Image (cartoon, rainbow, N blue to C red):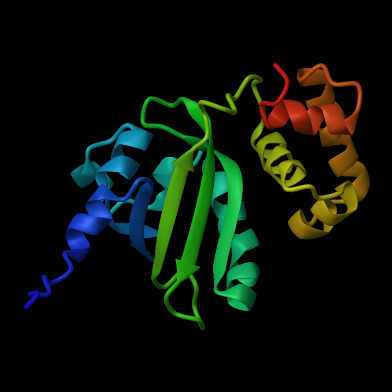
Amino acid sequence: MNVVQPIDFESIFQHAPVGMCVSQNRIIQACNNDLAKMFGYQNDELLGQSFLVLYPSPDEFERTGARITPIMNARGYYSDERIMKRANQELFWCHVSGRGLNKDNPHAAGIWTFEDLSAKRPVTAELTPREREIAALLVEGKTSKLIARQIDLSPRTVEMHRAKLMRKFNSATSSELVHKLLGIMR
């Protein structure tokens, strides 16, 4: 007769092959070793901290929170690729996915995963917070018009930022820019 062993969920959480955390109101309540290592912290340094410490700027933290709320309200989950910040201030591309545990208030409680994309997509240019936000949306395949609507800017302003990104990445076309942002061309 086989004896069924209880599942050790804490061990599964700690040994997951991606960074993981549990949050309440965008405050880290629990995190695994991979998350702490990815961002250059010790586990206990992140506990009780706002997600703000993982963002390049307070403005990006606020705008991202506002941008994902309606999406999480509609779908219950969210996923994107964005530039994040390590403890040593190094910026890196990161795939972030999360699920709200309270459908009526997605930030009340959630589980989040983080995957470091820096090996295949280095941050190669000095970007402003708004350029980082627009670059992340371009990588998702969004048009200037959609980006403008999503982040409450005029399409002309988004085009201006896209042009600056094209200069910084020495790209002749929008397609080339996206390839360079994705790290396909170096």
